[in-house]
Length: 122
Image 1 (spheres, helix red, strand yellow):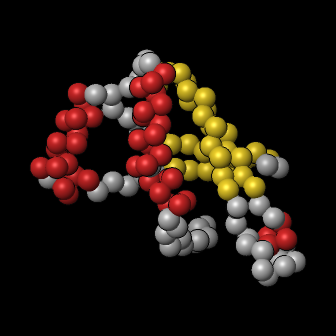
Image 2 (image 1 turned 90 degrees about the vertical axis):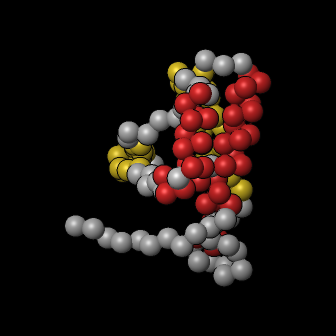
């Protein structure tokens, strides 16, 4: 927590330190299998020993398949199931997850879409 508080104070004093570029890569393996990697990124305060996520989404494929223009192409809802083991109490972990949901760039982007550019690279 001391490192997190120090980081917050440093950004408060110099807002330019808040600019951050997040990089993740995703590689198709086979069929529905993909591998995502996030390198050189870590959190402060709580030590995570194990973290795995399962995303479950519901959608109507009529939109995806262009069978009905009134059906949205995207998901109707997404649930994230997280299996976490960390060096903190269950209450602290629940508090961290609630904070992360409300302040996560990924959750925020899914809930408040931003422009996305798709570019083919050689």
